[in-house]
Image 1 (cartoon, protein in one colour):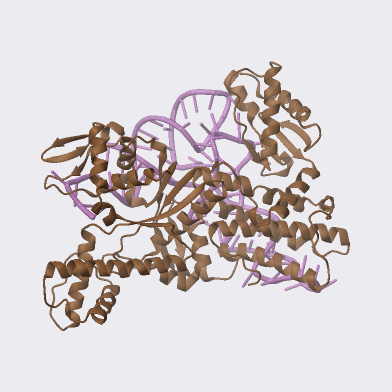
Image 2: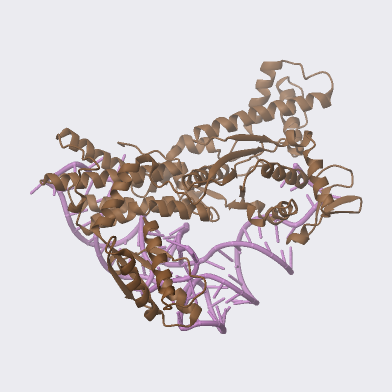
Length: 556
RNA sequence: GCGCGAUUAGCUCAGUCGGAUAGAGCGUUGGCCUCCGGAGCCAAAGGCCGCAGGUUCGAAUCCUGCAUCGCGCGCCA
């Protein structure tokens, strides 16, 4: 909806410049915001103040000039009133017609509502979760999964072509440790005393894998070459765990387009090709028997080793190769979603990407803060090493997929999140999920009622929306018309949590409206108009929920 | 020690490129069901936006310093 307005204001600025009323030079991209209070009209823009600050002019005077031009340009099509106010705001009150069009747009577009085009079809990859296949996913991974998936949805809605990818870290020492851990449990199952590796994985799931191993292969690994067995067992265990991870994510509503294996990358020649490329470009040097990447040339704190003195590769080396591989697949931009404890890697990874000839911005890293699980307001103790952690699966089974996903998406990624298990289960308005879903169910209930009473659901063309004259109705329309802008903003800022804020606000507006006014009124035409409005609100709510991967129930 | 991030109401947090009287939920207090689902609604109280400077017509927002908290700083993965 803002689109029309942006065009009008741009045109008005252009006109004003032509007349020499505002200074020449680059015109500011107008910021148009929904006013938080209707007494400021429907929308407000600060262009006049921006212009004034550049030219030391009088903002109120400039606002007056632009306000006049806006009216000229609009020719009474969309805008009812233009006022200048405060330090130089231009407040715009839209005509009823403008809002009626907004509602009809929603009704016509239905599930496609809020599809935008800022992405311009650019290809963008979101890599997320990427947990090591050495144990089950825990809550923190769940948050990353919810954020990554919702962000991918939002980007797609904003007109990007999106791919979801999971990077499987299956090449490092931790896989060997996993193999040794399972092997020790396996020996125990045969009554053999087996020293458990000091850094081994303690969890219950290791024993389960050992049991599966015994079931499938019997005592085959008791004899024979230890090294060889260990490799096989490690691979076996990692595969088992990966399958569980995949199932977990599927149950959580997250699907990946690509599962990319680190070990496959390492087995190929891509790592050496990547290093060759860096070497040719002069980014590498030898020192102390190791090969270093001069990342300090690209704003990193210190240079980084890529090949150790013993000739083996660092993890960072394969990461460079991995990112090179990503870009070779034609993505314009890649987004990595990492745990916040990895923030020390951001600078070096960006340096790596730049050394490969890309821009710093071509790689974006979104850091996700930890989740503090609580029960009865008390923190739930977790320790990965001791194998005591609450898994994503446990949380999902306890509170449900919708509640878990929604709560993960209520805060921005880079802020800590308290997740109260009891609250998540509570069916009250303390629980934001239910509050929002209830708004949707409530509308469905009204429509069911209408159907039962034989009230026809209005057609988009025939309905007379000019009957919607209440301020509360205007509020609803203002909100639902803002979804495309919210989606666009969320995509550009990579902040899917903005969708949940939108949902909270429109739900409040809906509940308030519902309480004070009857949709199924005595007047037939009025009822039809209100039903149309309800359907539009429901459409917007359902759309926003779907972007978050949360269901929109018809009854609860 | 260096780097990154955080600090907004009693609690948990929003706050869009620097704009108008800084918002929401919970909690507290007080109200609202003859009527489409009370899983809801309304109202009140509650603020030195960590502290001190600076830039600006205007700062929670930008800059500098300080404080507190978290995280990161390996030829680990």
